[in-house]
Length: 382
Image: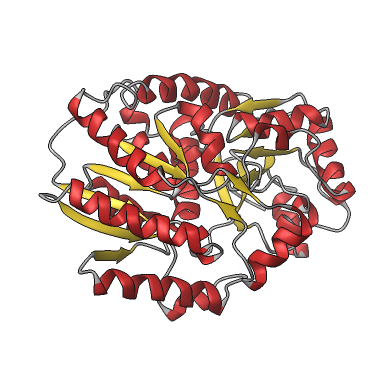
């Protein structure tokens, strides 16, 4: 394939969730700013390569598996179908900002993490290719170490970095616009749904003099059903939550479908509280205060990446086959939720605001330190 300069092929998973689009958007910015000697060709991660795709891939300097909770049991061929024979890929393979997927989020779950032999084959191939492998958090790095992969770098998610904000300070000003990002665990747990609703009401009261809005990162419209692996139950659950918000006279907005929607909304926001990892990452990336309530392993692992205020939404969750079946078919609540989470979140936000953000301010320094690792990763790509 003729191209004006050497290129990378990146495989991205953006379908509907605004956070997935942000990963791709920010990653492309990093390549443009830190590797201007390379162009980027973006392909949908969930589609197997056609003969033409494979030709494009094999003309690249590297194939890069991009972002998201991709390090799962069925990473290959479930998340990345690629080709049925990895030897057909003639260029080195690596990853950028990928993460594990764990419901409980416990560090112990990163040991003995279940992977199919086919996924281990893909990891072995990346290890043999010898390029640095960028991961989203230290839990994921530990998974790689467990399986003998020693080229990992904990760069954080690509969405964490805005180069013009490196070295800046977290903004502390009057909160005129406050956003609350809605999680998805309420679809599987009545206790977490109650928690989210209580926390929304308490947060609105705390910021009663601000413009307060609840933010949906997944679509509320029928277009959601056109995205890969979409379900009616997911859409109906979000619409029911939106109806509850309307009944309580709470403003809400749907920012799904693009990085631009997410950026446009949160750039106008002064303070974020909520369950969406990429709302927390975005606000932290532009040096604005954010509080995350972690509803899975992505959020819990993020606590070790750049600190700040991260609260666990639940204390325990039933795992294994029975737990999965209960969540899938909706019989019984598999989550054990602490009764004071809502009050503790509000108490700590009030403390931060009263005392000049003692736990939130240091996140900027840690992000800047992690950025140096991301720079190293990008510089070492071919």
